[in-house]
Image 1 (tube, one colour):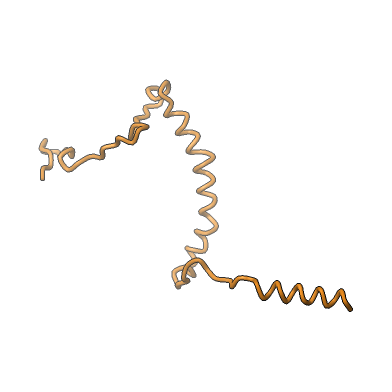
Image 2: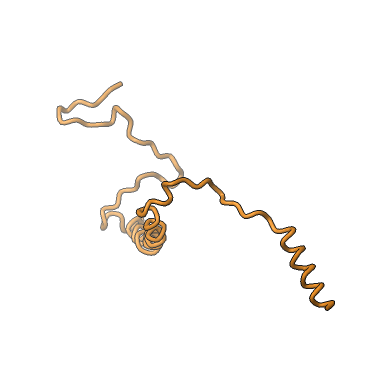
Length: 100
């Protein structure tokens, strides 16, 4: 009897202090779309392939000694001094550049 009382008290205390179950964001009907449900299953496959296949390939071809062999051109330097193309950098078939 004493053991049952202790167990019942422990369970009651556990349920009394348990946090409320809540979603971290609001649900809307777009999450019920069948394509969204399929995407939930396919996304981890794409994520895994990116990290296990494409990133190691990029690491290999982007080595300074191998860039010329594979034709890799870096998009930015390692110090973050990347300057994107501006409007004046665009070339058009007429030979003119677009200016502001």
